[in-house]
Image 1: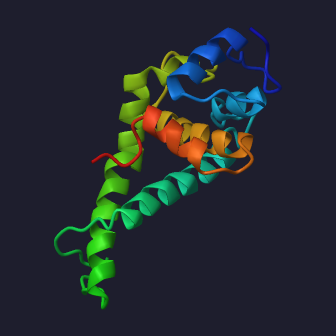
Image 2: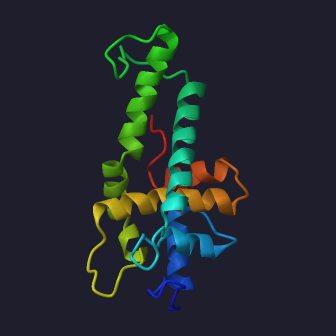
Length: 172
């Protein structure tokens, strides 16, 4: 294993290959994947947070786009202020789409799915750290999607494939 620029041991190429098989995507630039697996620390203040911001936006885009294309609907949805939205069609779509985003891309869902898939064994840990915390796991899941987006020259389709592999895409 090589040592990263942030002094913590990074996953080997063999370990990254196993992760790539799990997510159904092969990186051209594995530096992005390694960055996605590095949480913020006192040495590396940002860690994977920038990639996680990108990943969160891509996840929202993929889920919302799928919902709008499928004309997903459901019962009444109230705005956060308690008033109905004026456009009934938008109100109905927003309800189911928001529910799916919450179901698949909330911090608790991302955390649970990351642990279920065994992603925690790839996350860079401090030498004294025995386990990956829930927030770190959720952020890492977002960062992986963000890393894919940047690696594939900002194409959405490979991100949707990875989201399906991670079971964080729209499910029927």
